[in-house]
Amino acid sequence: MIQTDICVIGGGPAGLQAAIVARELGARVLIIDDNPVLGGQLIKQTHKFFGSKKHYCGIRGIDIARILSHKVEEMAVETINPATVIGYYDDDSIGVLKHDSLFNVKAKRYIFATGATENMLTFENSDLPGVYGAGAVQTLMNVYGVIPGKKALVIGSGNIGLIVPYQLLQAGVEVAGIVEILDRVGGYYVHAAKIKRAGVPVYLSHTIIEAQGKETVESAFITRVDENFKPIKGTEKRIECDMILIAIGLSPLCDLLYQAGCQIQYIPELGGNVPVHNEDMMTSRPHIFVCGDLASIEEASTAMLEGRIAGASAFQTISGENSNAQAVIKDAKSELSIIRKSPFEQRIISGKKKFKKG
Amino acid sequence: MKGYIFEHPILKFSRGKKVKFYFEDKELEGYEGQPIAAALHAAGIRVLRYSERYNRPRGFFCAVGKCSSCLMEVDGRPNVMVCMEPLKQGMRVYRQKGRGRLR
Image (tube, rainbow over all chains, first blue to last red; front, side):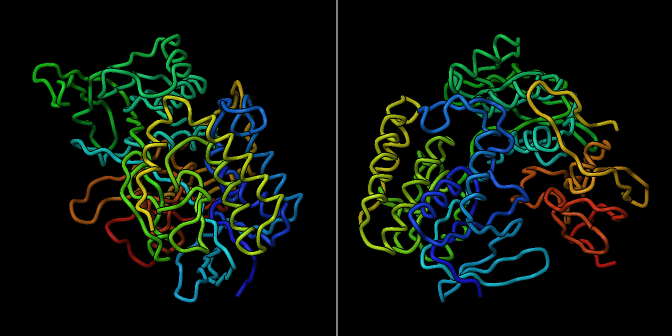
């Protein structure tokens, strides 16, 4: 059994920041991640991030991943990857599977930063190969340099639904259009403007009803919807494409938290079922902390700040109150409150207020 | 090799050495260490398995080891998540039918 002070599960923006802070404060830290390289989903983000200068605004996601993983290496944070945490046990240890070997890790505190998974949408033939998560295509294209297909139709116009088509164009792939069920684009205006400039059609008040193809996607049928989001007969339109990219949202990956007995609450504003946590990112079990998309589906910038809070809070619950840790928490909380002033973040603020007390 | 991006305005791709592997006993080329699913996709193979009950074709969905849509038989082992499993020289990869079988 491997023992450590703080074990961070997930080496994305939130987990890496948590690990860096906890290590800086003096804890022994172990990161477990299922990828061969650290950085989580940042490793496929070619766009520049917003937020404050102090926290990597204006830098591409791929470069933030490099900076953070280099820091982790420099500071001698232990890492086990690629490896999967497969269970949380009654003795408060976790099971880790690396290649074909299974072993236990026991930490004084756990920080879960497992992130999220892409939501699926059901329509006729939605299981046909070629119906992919938009993030999945981003991975294939930006991490592994594989041409994902010839022509993509994107469903959903949140930030992922706007960024991925732009990246497809950069890689030389055609984009047939973006389909959005609402009467307005969901993501940031800057991303939407880029897409408009590139001449990609955006079908507002539309949804997909069917994919067609023999063994893989060859075309899609979309339709206009009424104010109750019901398809309007006679407005169906056939669109040629060999990929249908689903970008309708993400769900937090809280399986391990259920197993650990943490209280989970359904809060749509935060992305669905999320572990209940306080301002210091502590769950209903005081030795377990959460941060990033697991705590609320948000942005890499806020994930990093929550990670810093989780790292410092977890450290303080081991070592007692500490002025350096408190400074980190204070700083991150004030940065968070600035970012969350954005109208896009209002749902997060109201969502986080919904946690049951006690 | 076809199916790959070699020129990109922002990204540079570092790839492993070229290796040969087998898909349904047919010899293919890929780069060592890339996920098997990436090598197959680049080679134009998008159907990775057939579903258990209705025998419907399935491809990958999440590409990051979460959804289990891409399970294949690799070197005699069924249920291998090929979006995560690194490609090695000489690997034998088969489309999985249903729950697959041990070879």
